[in-house]
Image (cartoon, rainbow, N blue to C red; front, side):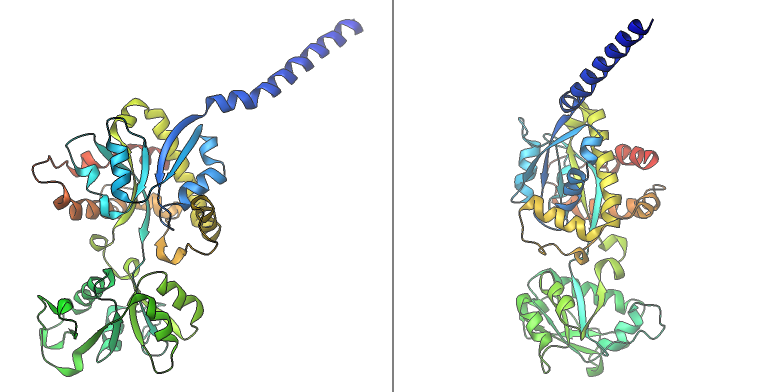
Length: 378
């Protein structure tokens, strides 16, 4: 009896050892390869890097082949080719017309990654007052502080148009005689602009200045008091200048129709060929997104490692990384904020679809089924 029991235990032990030894190899074979495109910036790399480093891809049976793309158009070409070399990838707003294009090899939006917050309005402390003590500068407070100021902007870049859009929001619902207006010696910036009044008290002088010169200008005692710029200049100012404070950002002051998300898009052929793999991939992205929101600085470092960028290159202030609660709220219904962001992106990019091509509907362009299932599951 004892010999029989001993033999049985030995057999069980051998089987267990063989099973344990085989499991890693079997798990490795079970991983499905997905070819993804990422961008070497704080929006385009950290989420995928977190999913890889924290094991979310492996958890969901995914092995990723990363391609750091040089540009959005090149990425779209690789994904839409007959013999595509990418299955899914991160994109900024610039090439977001591709999932809307109904001709050729199609794509679909499948995931909202983050919101861009790159453009910033910064001023020296004390020039603007948080009168209602709500922890932010509202439009009325910005209106009061801006009167008669000089604002330094590289007007030919995005912040030039961004500042005009901000003024439109500030002036909304005010009588024309009370509205702020701009003047600039840079004629190209004033092209097509008509001031609502001629009251000198409401005048804002916009001075064309290289974005890279803004940090030094604000650091000077007799230099720039108010600037509008983009990273890395804005990040440098906020990190190194204790006398500067953030007045307005895209996410904090612009409505959804003027706040465009960065997204992930996928080949429709890949979605049709491998729906279960696509779902696993989105599950991993969502779990990585939750981790990123709770560990934003480490997520930036992970993105730098994946992109082979120097430590400190990626600044989390340039984006809004949704939390789990935000994702749940944003996609709770078809009218929720996440859909508003996606529809705003859709509407602004419809005109970029090549003339004569079919324009897909919003519902055809955004396959939200994978995201919604991930939200319900995790």
